[in-house]
Image (tube, rainbow, N blue to C red; front, side, top):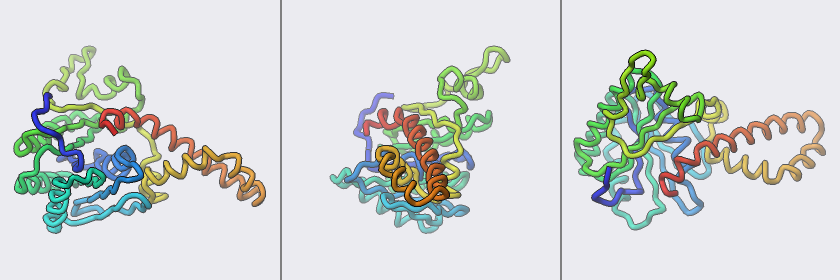
Length: 267
C-alpha cells in the first residue's frame, strides 16, 4: 500500500474484534520492547472492561481503564499525536469484541488518522474473518493507516512451516483449501514465536519483557562477575541464580527473534 500521508509514529493501536489472540502480549510486552530507547516515554493503556494489567516496569507506564473512562485517555493520545516531541509513545491495547469496536469508534469520532495498527491472529480458521472485520473498521475512518498483521504463536520461525501452520490464511493445495491472504489489506506481516516466556513474565513474574531483557542483557554481559559473587553466597544461592541465568539467556534468544519487527518499524 502506497502512503500518501505521513504516518503518526507516536500512536500504536493493538486491536482485533476477537479476544484471546495475543493483544495484551503484543501491546504490553512486544511493542514497548521494540519501540524503546533511553529517551522514549512509553505509555500503555489497556482499555478493557474484563481485564486489568498487572505488569510492573521501571521503563513503561501502564494504566488499565474501563471503556467508559476511555474518552479522556484517547483525547490525551490525540493531543500527544500533534506533539513535535517524538519521544512520547502511546500504545492502546484494545479489549476483544465490543471493546475493540467501541475504541475504534471513539478514534473515529476524534478524527484520528494515520495511526499504526497491530492485529494479532492465531492459526484458527475463523479468526481470518475477525481480521477482515477489524481492518474494515479501521479503514472506515482512518484514510492512511499502517496495518501490521501479527501471526502469533508460530511453532517454527521458518516461513515455509509458518505457511503450513497458518493454512487458514495461506491455504493448502493438498486439501484444496484456498488462500485468503489476498483478501486482507495490510502493510506488514510479522511472526511471533510460540513460547511460554510471555506468559511467565506476564502472570508469574509480573514484569515487562523490556525490563526482563535489560536485566538479562546485563546478567549475560557480566556473567563472570555475577558467577563469582554467587559462588561466595553459597551453593544453594548459586544454584538458584544459575536457573535465573538460564532463563535470562532464553529471554535474549526471544528478543533476537523479534528483531525483524524492530527493523521493519524503523526503530
